[in-house]
Amino acid sequence: MLFEQIARNKRKTVLLFFGFFLFVALVGAALGYFIWRSAQTGVIIALIIGLVYAGYMFSQSTEVVMAMNHAKEITSAEQAPELWHIVEDMALVAQVPMPRVFIIDDASPNAFATGNNPQHAAVAATAGIIQRLNRAELEAVMAHEMTHVRNYDIRLQTLAVALSSAIALLANLGTNFWFFGGSNRDNRNNGNNIVALVFSLLVLVLAPLAATMVQMAISRNREYLADAGAVELTRNPEAMISALEKISTSEPMDEENVAPASAALYISNPLASEKKMASLFDSHPPIDKRIEAIRKL
Image (cartoon, rainbow, N blue to C red):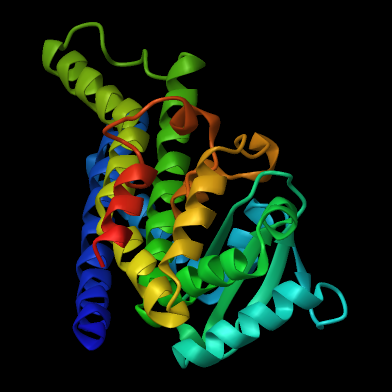
């Protein structure tokens, strides 16, 4: 099961990589036609931006994601003894290298893992999760994150963050150009141009939403698998259940501390919008369904 999941996630990474650039090319074509009346020019520019951005994210994913979420690294056990030793213990049990450890100064309990592979992984925990969860519950949360590391979920999510951010950048460029009236030239006598321009604008406006949908659809069951992995590593399903209950009933994180593109990385969605209502675009399965799945293990 474990090795099948790892192999599946590696295959998904390759497919997502190609899908990412196809999507970028589509948005680039819309951008190019909208601004320069040349879809080919837009595709070339978009692919260059996509390659540079994806390459940068793969080489600097931890630094980028941690900076997006205002996380500060701790480099020794003296800075946060309980968290450090729990991460160390769970990494040992999961048989992955000790990841880098970060803390986010936020009162809401939450945590996530990131990186490209187990050798270059990092975990982040909020100040709130350290304060509110007991040791067994915090062990369960860190075991959950170590499962993401072990199963290469972190690589999938790194590419998903790159996809969402790059698409948003291209879409913002096009919509800002339209806002300042840059699309009015050469439209007066050509109805086909107007139709193409409207279609291009529609692509640019909907692209961030589509990118978010792709990010959400990558693998919602990764949370179920990570919950099961936490139980496997800790042999304490009640601790995982209790941790999820505390996290789900807490206030959302300060939006200044969370980049929307990285919300799917967290153990529970940290944004207020998802805390208030269920949605087809939720990045996580409902907590009650996760708890039900744990009870059935």
